[in-house]
Structures are given as structure tokens and as C-alpha cells.
Length: 355
Image 1 (tube, rainbow, N blue to C red):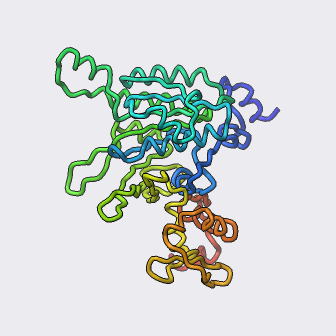
Image 2: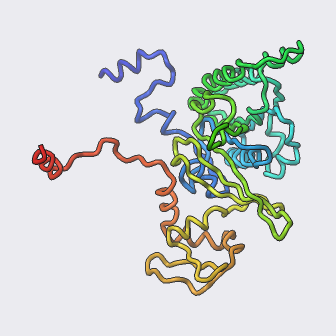
Image 3: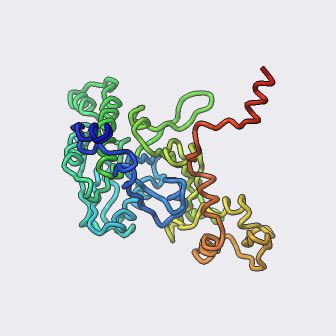
């Protein structure tokens, strides 16, 4: 018996395994959503998506945070027919019909109303402790930003108006304790959160809740938006996902996603600008777009309007016949190159000559 076998046998930790065989990494789940650029924002890969760990969707009110979270939850439930959504609700702004609009069967949603951080912490830890890795559960919290602490509630009932310093500490403890369970049980947790503007000469959006959320998260999005208008009528919104933190995507990446009142999330939104940048699509005339044959460099004769570039029929040939997906990964995915660059012989000789 070698030393590796001895160490593994003596370990009191059930999940101890040789790293190359560890299920915590090699058996990690990945759930692909129907929207390629959402998958890019989550994993850097249009064929990737949501994995276990903490994903935080932050932004002001009415910035589609809950909707993006439900899109991911729906993809998870679609992939596993026996999966359930554990939904912690502090805002009570998502009626059953809203879940159904994403194709979510509400009989597969366990709704847990919460009023304070400590209540969430105790219940969530209890649930995670009793879930096994084979169980398919996705957790959603809507929202962190709307939760008070017990102290804040007690002070209000006692008619005290004092600053609450315990909330950030309670949130930090919540995520510090839950994060290991998420990886060990292979569970995705999506937390909706709010942002506030930092005071200063150059104000920026800050994720509420203190440093604990930032340290524990795998992904943090800060979502911005602009109105899409036709004349004076608002037709929808153009959202921008700002990747504030990610273990998989290049930080500070900006991912555009369009949403209309009529059609909801535009499945192929966000792809066009990247395709033009990479030379897969060109604008032969103002308002018109054509595909490019990357092998020959020739521009297709057929020209389409911007609305047609949101159709599956426009993008599927590009995905199938070009290396556009690889281009997206190279642009957004965090690289896994060697961290220690080998020094070549000519470089060594140059260094010696300089000395």
C-alpha cells in the first residue's frame, strides 16, 4: 500500500479522494439554458451554463433579475425530471403564473417564505445537511437585498432607530457555511440581490450585503438596462450583464441580452456584435447584415434586417459551419494555460549576455 492509499484510508472525511478521480470536480454538473449568451455569461461557453455554487444576480429594481434566475431554474428542471426548486421568498412578487411563463411546473417548487437572514440561514443549512449528492435540487433566494436581520426587526418592534451592524455579519456567516455544501452536494444556488451607488467622484454600483457574498460567490452579475423604443412607445429593454466576478468568465465582460414585451427573452440576442467583431457577419449597408464564408472570405449575397438576425435560422448555420463557438470561448472564457512559462534556450542566453 502506497502513501496515497494510506492517507486516503486514514482520512475521516467521507469525500476524500485522489484529485484526478474526485467527483467534486470531475462529476460536476453543467446545465445549459436556451440562450447562448446567458451560457457565456455563466461559463464562458455558449454550450456551457449553470454549475454548482453561488451565483448572484444584482441590480436595481425592475432589472429582470428574478426572470434570469427563473430561466436558469427552468433549464435545471427540464434537464432532470425528478428535480425540485427550493425557493426562498422575501419579496413575494412572483405569482404562480410567472413561474408557469418559464415553463416551470409549480408542483415542483417548494416555496419557503422568509422574513430575516437568520431564519434563512437556519432553514437552508438544515436542508443542505439532509440532501445527498444524488438528489437534484436547485436553490433560489429572492431576494437577499430585501432581508432584515433579527436585531433590525427587534429594534423596530421596540421602536428603536439605531444602525444595524449585525446584518452584514449574519449574511457573511450564511454564505460561509452554505458554500461548501453547494460544491459537495453539486447544488446551484441563485441569489437575487440589490445594488446601491457608491458615493464619490466616480460612483459605481456596489452589491449589497457586505463582503461575505462577494467572497463566497462563483459568479456575480451586475445588471444594467436601457429602454428599447419605437418612437415614444417602449417595446422592451436591452439589458447588459456586467460580469463583476467569475471563476469561469473574464471579469468585467459585458454581455447584452434583449427582452421584448411580446416575445420575452430574445434567444439569440447578444451574438450579433461579437460575430461582426470576429468577421463572421458584416454590414454591407446601413441596417443590413450578411454572413461571411470564413474559409474563402466571401460575403453571402443574401442580406437580412436586424430583426432576422434574432432568428434560429440565421445562427444555426454559423454555429454548425464555422468556429464561431470557439471564438466566443476564446473571447470570454477564463484561460487554463500553464501558469509557469517555460524559458527557452535563446532567452536564457540573452539573459546571460545582459548580465
